[in-house]
Image 1: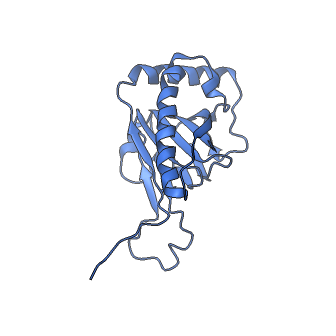
Image 2: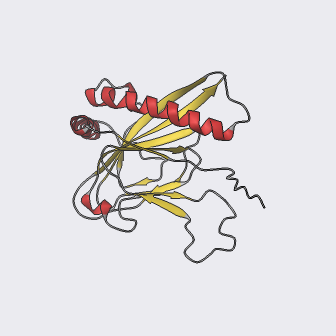
Image 3: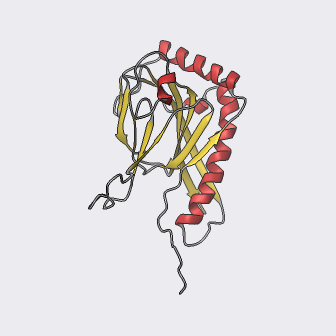
Length: 206
C-alpha cells in the first residue's frame, strides 16, 4: 500500500521579524503623528472604525523611517510573491515586477477594523510599529484575524474546528498574505497605540 498526501490550494502567510528597528519605529511613529495633526483622516470608504488612516502615498514621502523600512518590504514582497507564484501558476513567468503602495493606520482603545479584503492587489501586508500591551493577552484583543477562505469548509462544522487564525501585533513583525484573504482587527482597551504600516502590491508578470 502506498499513500500520498496532496495539499491543494494552499493559503500561505509570511511572518518576518525585523531586528534592530527601534529607532526606525520611533521615526515612523513621529511621522504618522505629524500627518495626523496636519492632514485629514482617510478612513472614509474603509472598514476602519475610530482610528486614523493616512493616504496611500506613504512610501512616496521623504522620511528616514520610510527610507529604512521600504527596502525590507520590497525584498519581502519579491520573495513572498515568488513562493506564491510557484504554488499558483502552471508555469513560471520570465519576469516578476510589482507596483507597491502603502499607508499607516493608528488605533487607540476601542478602535476596530471590520472584515475586508484588498481589491486591486495580489499581495498585501502589514508591518507593526507599536502595539498595546493588552494585545498579547489571550483572545481577540487587539489582534488581526485571518479567516478560512474555503467557502464550504464550515458546511458541517466539526467541534473545535479552526476557522480563523489570530495574530498579535509585535513591533518589528511583518506579515504578508494574499490580498483576497479576508481579515479584520479587534479592539483593545487600556493604554497604548496599535500603529501599523499596511501595504499592497500589484504583480506584473511577463
